[in-house]
Length: 603
Image 1 (cartoon, rainbow, N blue to C red):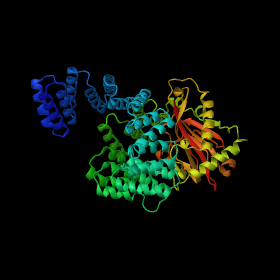
Image 2 (cartoon, helix red, strand yellow):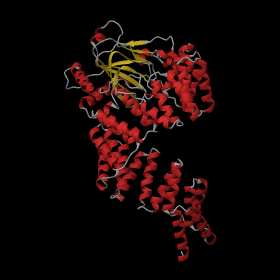
Image 3 (cartoon, rainbow, N blue to C red):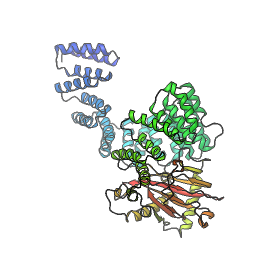
Image 4 (tube, one colour):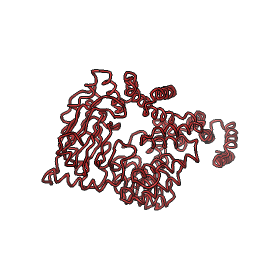
């Protein structure tokens, strides 16, 4: 390369880095007139086009540069970066691999290769690459952050902690590392340590909504409710127009019974930014969870002018009309939404629910079939389809909903070091009572007249709860061992050699408390394990406090009675399909009814 050419290339690069894209392009084209396949000039043209989102043009120049000089790690890496951003992961991975093969010390190549492999679901190889990067660049905190994340995704919690700690040793004020470390500790149930890590991330300058939500949760779990509330209040000050932050603050204030209007902050934000459909959407969702549907319609009238026909708000309006029995208005609203969204599954299932309520189960069935074609295990679609079939008199109802065979009460045995189930579940009850801190039922759940624990119950480092998880697992295995062989069935056909918990929580019902009839959209099997029962429920002759199956929610207005009722007993675990309607019959007592519930899926 001549000195003159090198100088021109350096000048073009300076223009590009300074944001003077047109000058850089002009100089590169001059270079190509005298050096038609000059790879560096072609690379700079590719980078200029990429920076202006001219991706086809950029790809042309990347390829020309590599055709001229195939062994360019930087060009391979930048080309791969663009492809990864466009979602073309397989192509990006191939280019990253070529880049690190050309230059085994190419740190950015190894880093991005691990990220791409993770995004492509190739976790094992991503971990291998992350370890290679940490060996190659042991003084780079970002290498340890990447390794910690890869180890965590591989299920190696201890190794992930070691990686994050090494990164923080190198850079004690690294906000990203503190945040990642805090999230690991939070997931592991180490809430006080997690809160400390999140506070260090804040002190290092990280201010993002997710950090504040996680910090608030940690203070809540550490029984520091005032600190949790303060975090939520600071969050809505910093991120006043973030709908998730506003939703979390309103939900927290409702459930803790805080004084004042739990919706005041989101109303204020909307008054300042009335053209934001996401803020309006969060607001009307909160109203809807309290069944304040007349107010939903009133507020949506206000939103229509500044927001226009926003899909989310049109859907909320149709749902509100349906809840209020405005059949024609709701139907018209859903029809409009479906015309505008040819592939939307959730709007179709909401429409299916409305059609079932309004006496059109055949069309509801067709909408459910649409969803099931796209996801054969969509629990919402199967729940509504089962009800539609029942109303249609379709014989497939009994195939889908076999209440005698599918509802499986099973005893959870005490661990070997307990004399009996009574003493074990008394200990479980005492541990759970300490976790119920809220004063009201969750705003967006089916529980009424009680409280629910936060987060995944079995993440807690509590020996009693961990022992309970083991005993539950043994009970589940006894049920799965007795499964029929029916590969075409949406419930029986999902049986595999293992299972994993999808969620777990505890519910404490007070007198007149109950669960509205519902299903669980995320599970395969769902459950209710009875930990403590009022004397009136244990000794009563009626069905107060029992669990019932097969009756849709009262709000649907259907004359469909429960198909099976199961009497609760301490230590009894009721297992049933997640798509099966179930709910709790209210009871009267001065004592609490305490359960552990969870979903699990095939692994």
